[in-house]
Image 1 (cartoon, one colour):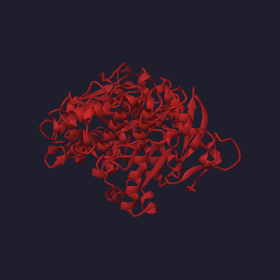
Image 2 (cartoon, helix red, strand yellow):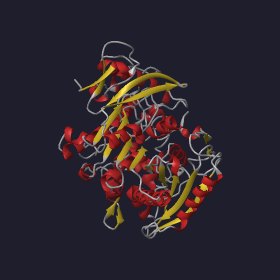
Image 3 (tube, rainbow, N blue to C red):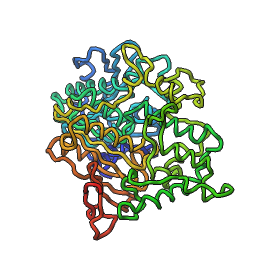
Image 4 (cartoon, one colour):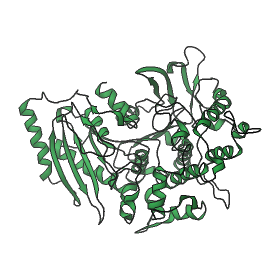
Length: 547
């Protein structure tokens, strides 16, 4: 795989499943064979960063070293067994402490000056953060970018750990927004010191938690980046954590509502039968789940439980997952539910769709369990079954972090007023898979609609911000839909050449072979088959306004 192709794929999907890779071997840049004089000069420039006046009063540079491969970065839960093979670069590590108790670790990786493409890139994290993403740094530097990544203000042993927040409200502020900004400012200063000039363009790329921080950057720090890619963003953090808890409790709180993984293919097939053909094609992709009216009650067993039907309790669980959390006292929706088409699909580990998160479990887990226990209730032994979707929803939003900060103000990136980002000329691309069973695509649309209302409508918004919904695509990547696409190239063309993307071509690759391609269209447009040629070829589809 070439450096550019690896880089595009890795960043468009934010390398969601690269844990099986043991090394990066993408050597289109200066490596072992570099001339000794040039290598020595670059090593001197790298070492000089340590003593340079970076103008960062609360930041300390702890490492500045020239890296010649192979290089094994510090081991974290996301980099275990990872080695950078064919890329030389200057590695700078630092620590920012904007207030007492704040410890924001970051690293900046810089390609040699001759290989630098003039761009600076901020790399988003995933899960609940807690580790510098070395795989993504390696992909970025191999593509010619000066890049920065941060642990978002805490160190964890897993991507879903929440224990770091107990007794440390400052860390929640860092996690929510401050760490990404501090790392960005430091990263730019390091790059300026190393290259002797500012980057021509700055970009931020992230999916999931990285998408959350992408939108936080656009809302809070509009001057940080010229272009931003926000994939499957977890930007309504309180709402998302509540929705995940709701879905987990829907299948565990009442034993009658246990939804076995063996029943998910039955549910998924029924949804596909009801929804697939609504766009004129039966292609195992649901173009827009909002257009489909499906009730899992059609699958309720007429008698005894059987493999091809759902019990009354299982129907109730499915309905709850589709509906999303509500206030029991008023029926008010707190956050959208999961989309039709997210229930089941084949995955290499057998855990596609709800099977990975909401089925076959005994209690809610992952980030939501850790967040509720450590950040909301500040009690590692808190029983999640006690959660009250009236009072405890308010508690989750209003918990004080001091200095007029609450969990909601620190963690939610839901401000629809992006006028400052637009005014500085910033461009923003967001994408979200409709088959995402972790962060519902319904909220991506809801937030975008909020932005449309705040920014004066579709024309005024698409001047700088475009949303691409991806049928059949799961969380960041995966699922039956075409999930490989180059959002990075699209944002660069928009920022640097003024070419706003009307469509982005996505491919479904199986065993190295492209099985299907489709255009991802600017919301609210959708892809429609033109009536001739293969339905697996994007060339035979046009982006049109929905019926």
